[in-house]
Length: 184
Image (cartoon, rainbow, N blue to C red; front, side, top):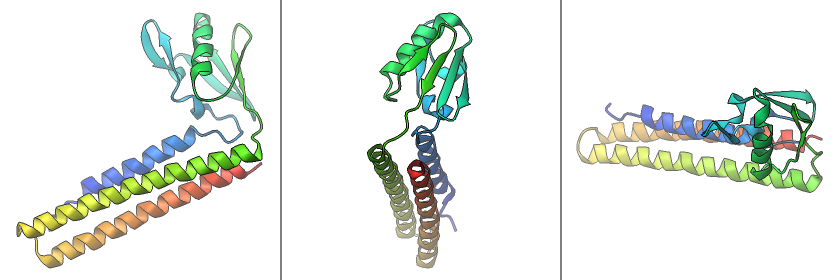
């Protein structure tokens, strides 16, 4: 059979990995260093991610400590956190920056769960679009007499099984992240 499904499976896998990365940046009321993954700081004229210019650690359940390798970076790091969409106010003591995560309200938790579900749905749409592309390729190959009708049907069955598997993974990720957020 010349229907090559590997590239489509790779695309589905990447969609799920992107969703997992998005989920690590959603804060659930606990200190998680990954919420800082998207923050960059100007370091000698080059934008650098925060992890490459500072040590980030969890000191308490809801407190992150950021210790820059160079003390001169404290102001830049503080400014980068303030302009980010984290909604956290950094506390600077001249040597380290402390980020305290406030306890999430019930309304905020529900908002975050909605966001989690929305991102999950977007990922499932992406997976279904990949399925459509794979099915279109199988149909084109059958029309061009590269594969038989039976091979096309088999390919479409395989594509559907693969799609169902990835959609189920996304559903489980949505449930897990929603439970994590709603756990007080």
